[in-house]
Length: 234
Image 1: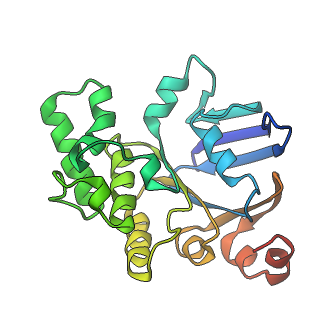
Image 2: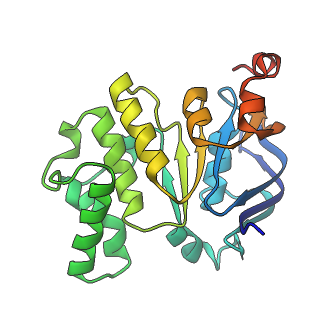
């Protein structure tokens, strides 16, 4: 039997301005699964991801790796959940690539040798070995996105959350990132509009619109349902 790593029941969230962003969401994710979350702008995709590492907290039950999402468990959960934002500049703030990728491991109080090993391994996984002393703000957008991913991989998370990972990339950088994500054998939740990316990496898809779960199931069936996609802004 497949191991359930995310279990959400009745998740509802309203922003302070009164906008209902998630409405009674039930959702399960299984170990090593790649799940696609699709929907138009404002559908609730990013809001959902922000609940999965506790940045936002709504009503309902969120269980990550069998652990209830609450204040007492937040630190433990965040060690296992890696969130990669849509804009890498939200994630990169140090003078060098090494310092950005080392930031998480250093906060775990690991030895200097272990931090260096983790940085080296993470950069190798994203194809950026040798970039340690480069300044992030001098990198291309594609390189920045890979470094942002490396900052998360250095923490060795069990679950990866990716928000619009291919947005604004040129075709070559986009192909490289899709291959890179496909090679990562960890549980992935990928939110976005790039339906080609979703079809290449995900077997199962959940379609959101206006904070509600409109459809879920086999990725190829949902992505080939033109009427469903058209009615939901895709």
